[in-house]
Amino acid sequence: MVLSSWLKSKAPPNVKQIHLIFPVPGHSYIPPDRVFGRIAKVVKKTHTIVKPDGYENILSEFVSVFRLGISVEVADWKTEISNVTKAPAQWHFKFAPCKRILIKKNPTGSIDIQGEASYRSDLGSFKSILKRRKTLNNICPEIIPKGQNINILKLNDCDKLLMKHFRETWRDLPGLQFYINVIDSNNNIHNPSEREEEQCEDEYLDLRV
Image 1 (cartoon, helix red, strand yellow):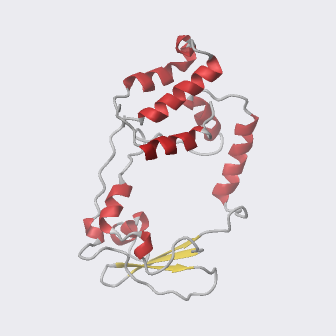
Image 2 (tube, rainbow, N blue to C red):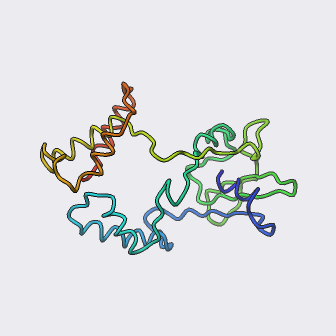
Image 3 (cartoon, helix red, strand yellow):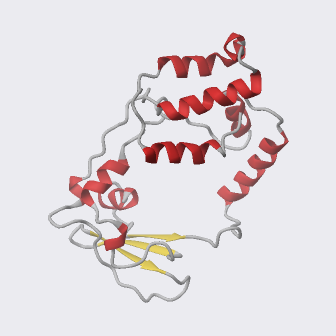
């Protein structure tokens, strides 16, 4: 819907349609994926990356780095879109198997979308995925302010990883001041739901220091 909103209100007059192509996973040779592969090689060879600056330095060797909330504003598109568009299960095509998505601007200014499960055949049709009595003019996402609180469960997991890697005295190390500031300044303390606990346990398995 971000592209639909752009096509309706900000696209040049000669741009009438957007064509999204999703390559087969694992077989993409488009430039962004090639760059990501080069970055991944450097990250894997780096034994330990402790501070965010470590990732930023690696990324800056290959791409331009923009800091969210500083050089780039972050809009709450997720909340805004859920208020305007239908749930994917109610769309006129199945989203998951789509290899192509076409977004078309009509002469009236409305936006229709078509999904195709094939790279070459056009078997679907253009229709709107907006809720009744909703238009793209209703979309106006709020800017998410910098400094959003972090779930206390994720902070606890981060604390456990730091203790495991640097021992219980990790707070005495000057190079870890970033984590001290994040953990101590967070005010989002609440009783987590069972779903949040399960989600955090799953994410804990993938965390790396």
